[in-house]
Image 1 (spheres, helix red, strand yellow):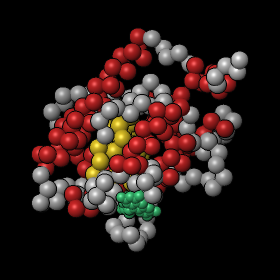
Image 2 (tube, rainbow, N blue to C red):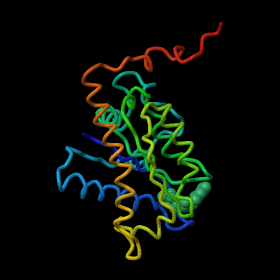
Image 3 (tube, protein in one colour):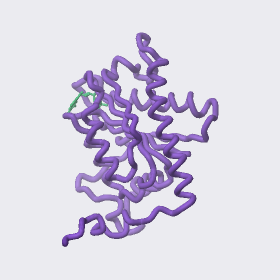
Image 4 (cartoon, helix red, strand yellow):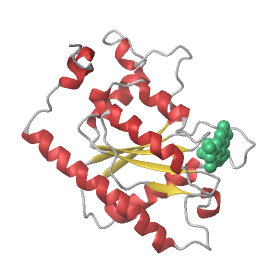
Length: 223
Ligand SMILES: Cc1cc2nc3c(=O)[nH]c(=O)nc-3n(C[C@H](O)[C@H](O)[C@H](O)COP(=O)(O)O)c2cc1C
């Protein structure tokens, strides 16, 4: 199974320091996946990092699906293929003004819900402050549900991430590695469970395409 880890920070400037705190969080997630799933091969799991900074977008918003076939920028085409091929998503976001990262929402908004649908996601937020992005996570749940990749119930929040992880994504020496690993594991095991279940069901029955046929089908009947 294939997972995409979206890293939602584009803030390559400071203050506030440290910049791109999310890189440490993303590295820690990748390392967790490697140690839990690649080394003991308990699951056939692959993970790929999608960094919002690798996708410079036009200032005039034109979603991938708004281009005529074959006319979209190749980076968008490639990402659309990866999203379609993935079995689940790890959405890593900083908290900005109690909301999810606008850079993450902007990148995701370029793709239709049909690419994400019938697959699970997990919300992972972090911040330099004490709440770990919990307020951003609340609105991410609504956002991701509308995008079609329903978030699993477990969420991961990392308060004061600069004190938890080194720049390499390893734990700072005063941290309880085992406790953090079990916290990650609860969320990721839910994600993998749902991804396996959704994959099996997609193989059994093609998803009904109500989401993509006609936007008017989302409207409530008028009489
Ligand atoms: C515009 C802006 C808004 C912020 N809002 C919040 C906030 O609502 N809650 C919070 O805990 N931290 C907030 N912070 C601090 C971030 O948690 C901190 O800067 C963190 O490093 C952001 O992640 P990043 O470096 O990966 O972009 C904010 C930072 C910025 C730049």
